[in-house]
Image (cartoon, rainbow, N blue to C red; front, side):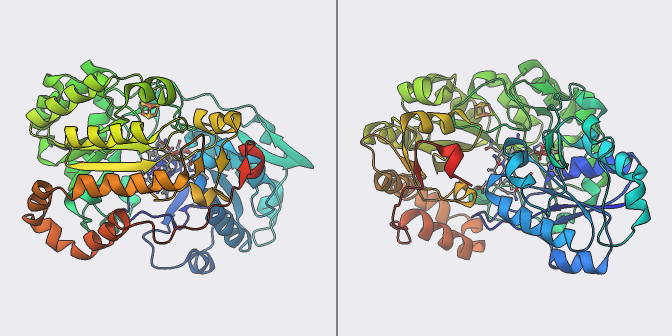
Length: 496
Ligand code: B12
Ligand code: SF4
């Protein structure tokens, strides 16, 4: 049986094109189990999915979706279904909201949670299905025997059935490596646009050295990786790193864990081994996950020696009260200062991620955040307007507080956007949006910073990209749609 694993077209604002490592993991597991599997990532393919499915016949099409792309995922499923393929949806949004997708006839199965084992179990069940074997062309029907045994699966048998959730897999070392070699790697960009520009044709891979995070920041959505921290052994990670550097000729590697440095000893050991094996010649970045309170000066020195180029930190707010009581980040402003100081002293580029407009925030607390960003002075500051994802504490908070919500559709939850998704208390949505622009203007338009940027070749090489960013970040909110509340209170009922 032939399987196509697809990621739908992303129309949310994002000029970066990263490999979809979740699909890489699924492809690696399926290939390891002997299945014929291909990848289709709409963000880099030149041929529409419909044409690929016309040209080549696939028995099963698996589609991945985060929350903002669920409509595109349903469209892809409809396209696949019309060719007679069995359609399976999985990924973060399906784990949070399986019911809504099961209402779509074009979706045969929904898989919640981690997919490596489940996908193989599904394939084994389809292999045995006499209905499917007897009808090699559309319309294909399969029986329901055996589905009830697959944990995490939602399926129909008259009505919709949801099997119990699949426990998080504890032994990450036994999962086959993602099928990195199957990605059309030179069609992706490098990993971070704002410090280096979007270098197309780079060979930028991502690696997940651990899954999950024990912290419970109220805005954070971790439907797949969960609230515990599970790590791969240093040996296992090194094996994948070697493959990326020596065989696949990576030019950049991004660690995309939720919190890769949760175990400081292990993080240092990984760096030492990268140095010892001469793997430090390829630069790497912590794309998302460094937590400020699990690092010391030695770690950053080791990271630098091990080839790290830049580190990202979730700073979130410059107001301790907001960090403690609203975001529940489990870190102090001084911890943040220390982390930036140590990383800069080691010669690493730094990135800070900040959130504006959490419920209960005021103009003053947002101003504290802007001032803190200016004080920390990272190479890149990324300000985001708070977005309520289903399954997060923020989602529930808005519901409990009866906040006014302006997002009408899952698509509106795309982050890195200049639109406020809700307003609460005395803080107006327009004020949050204005502060977002103000933050970008004040951070990036400082004379010393402008001089630094304008003397960099990269700024000029990526001039069109830079101008687009500048228009978006610095000009007022020219395209702001009128604010009509989508709902007050019951988020779960109205959105989607
Ligand atoms: C790296 C990353 C990116 C990269 C690469 C994109 C990617 N999809 O890998 C970039 C920067 C491009 C990116 C962009 C976006 N991202 Co992102 N990203 C991540 C990050 C940090 C790691 C992803 C990862 O490798 N996970 C590890 C692998 C093993 O898990 P996985 O990808 O979920 O796949 C497993 C399961 O989901 C399942 N599965 C997945 N697909 C399928 C399909 C089938 C058929 C089956 C059976 C199973 C299955 O099996 C896989 C193996 O176990 C996660 C955080 C996280 N910890 O997951 C956020 C995360 C997935 N991103 C998120 C978001 C919101 C986005 C954007 C929508 C942001 C935006 N611009 O608005 C875009 C969407 C782009 C897209 N097309 O997917 C959210 C999703 C929340 C939600 N409720 O949907 C997360 C959880 C971050 C967060 N905490 O908010 N992202
Ligand atoms: S934001 Fe970072 S530290 Fe907080 S829960 Fe999410 S992954 Fe963990």
